[in-house]
Length: 219
Image 1: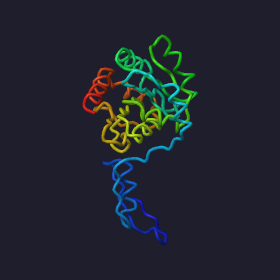
Image 2: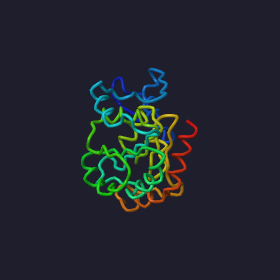
Image 3: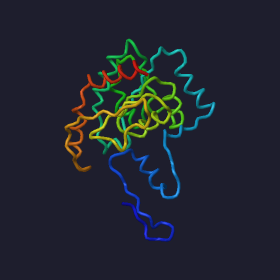
Image 4: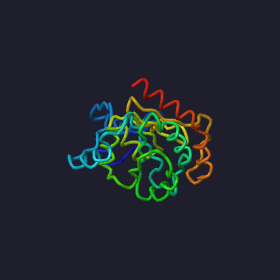
């Protein structure tokens, strides 16, 4: 329960663990207002941001598949192995245009793995608002549990998020998106980095490929 013993903050509201965090935020104001949350607010972008991204993306063959192999605080956060993202890119390289996204730090870490792959890399080349427009133009975004994953979902794009455990509270929040995780993963402390990495490694490449095909077919 969340409770403040001060004037104006004296109503306890149950913090549910079985629903998305966004719905829990709506519950916080439920004693004074009814809030129905259908989706996230899209990020704002200017015409100059659009022109910048369109410079890279005009005339690209569709479908457009964006891959974000990093995640916030990549030195501490477990990530699905970069070589598995590469496998996914190889699988779709003939039928899709592959676009890798990420920060400048992630570009330094991962771009050596992208050599020889038929893909465009915009890692380290976009602001968050430019990234939002880029994702809006894509047919699907594949990402670790991260800020970019949530941006893609906010822009209404089909999104696949990769998680180390059941992410009911943090799944990409739109009706065209899914979260993948291994159902038998153990609940581990945040300090158990190796164990959390092992949980992510249990997500097989073929499962991700099948989910990409499924989302693109039904949407």
